[in-house]
Amino acid sequence: MKDIEKQFAGAYALRGVHFELREGEVHAILGENGAGKSTLIKVLGGIYKADKGSIYINGEEAKIDGVKDAQDKGISIIHQEIVLVPELSVAENIFLGQEPSKLLWINDRQKMNDEARSMIKALDLNIDVTQKVKYLTIAQRQMVEIIKAVSFHSKIIVMDEPTSSIDENEVEYLFEIILKLKAQGVGIIYISHKMDELIRIADRITVLRDGTYIDTRVTSETTIFELISLMVGRKLTEYYKRTEHKLGDVYFEVQNLCSDKVFHDVSFQVRKGEVVGFSGLVGAGRSEIMKAIFKVDSMDSGKVLIAGKEVRLRNVRDAIRHGIALIPEDRKKEGLVLKNTVTFNLTLAVQDKFKKGLIVHTKIRDEIVDKYIHAFSIKTPSPNQLTNNLSGGNQQKVVLGKWLATDPKILILDEPTRGVDVGAKGDIYEIIDNLANEGMAVIVISSELPELINMCDRIYIVCEGKIAGELNRDEFSQEKIMHFATGGTYEEH
Image (cartoon, rainbow, N blue to C red; front, top):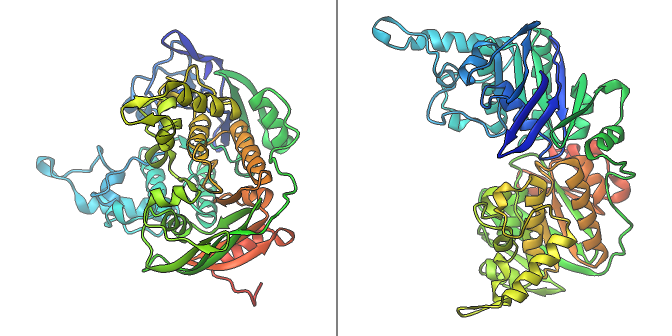
């Protein structure tokens, strides 16, 4: 791709961008939210038409006229949001739109199943091609997307945030598949915010910033900090912002929490000024435990204590009243009203502070909004901007502001930096550290082990709905966490 330009409403999304991919290479595209990564990929995939620039495949200029044309030219995109039909089988999804047929346009189901099995076998996968997609795990669905791309004889496969919703074991499995595709000569364009992941899987990394090409680095010849500097245009002396926290007394405690078939006999505690991490494989029950405490989900038995006293939480309103706030895992579905303004979202949980009956005290409301826009450096042209138009990192800061406006004493953050660029990650880490230093009890659920190891004072590990292990800061290691997360015992540890 040479000198690619794309404008929307007169503003440049891409300007003079270069990118190249070699046969059998993993080439990562790195950049903050809004850097132009998605726009560049959509130009390659035929979703957008470039205003200027050229695309060459095997040395010959290629005019890409739509998604089907891109597929015909060997280009497939596996989007972050998996696009499969849940009610169709694995084989039907793989061949959707290209079904082998018998006479009279009747689909040849046997041939379709046989060819799907052959593709799955070639990648050493164990997936039943007759099973409906809705019964597969997220990782298995991603594998089906990869097989679908291979079925189009794609030589260029784009993977957009492929590990955002899978656990450590499934990441290893995905990387094995990528190595097999490389060996078959497939070129892979890999987009991720997870720096450790890129260093490990990518052969080269191209950095975009503000819609422009910055540099391409051979991965083995660069460092995470050099890449971050290229991304954000300045040097970051520290990626994780953490100071030594002055821990107070136990402020928040959960005793013997149970919910049928979800989690069992869960007990833990958090001190004032402490950041406590929760780790575990996807489906272990971490999020469900926190949702039950916040009364989004139900629980069958157990006690919640605040400052040593048992509190009865009947609903979310009670939880807020007792100083608990939950930043949900899925900010788009559970944290924000995307088609409403920044002002609306920042003040949604505290309307009683400025609204009395039908009277709205706009001065008080605007003071709340200004406070969090400035405190968190939320990049928005106006408080009246639709939240949907903000980058992922700024959306996450709006969710943080929304709940901190309730003046919580206990803050629960579920995957606080998922889908957030590295600059915004640093900002969020600093916010968490500052809140702990102010005496707040903070709980962080994360699938990124480096995030927990670098930010937390203690870590609980959840396995199959139970607390499987607890580690103090001087015991932290990825190996120990994964030991408990995969069913290891204290005795073995």
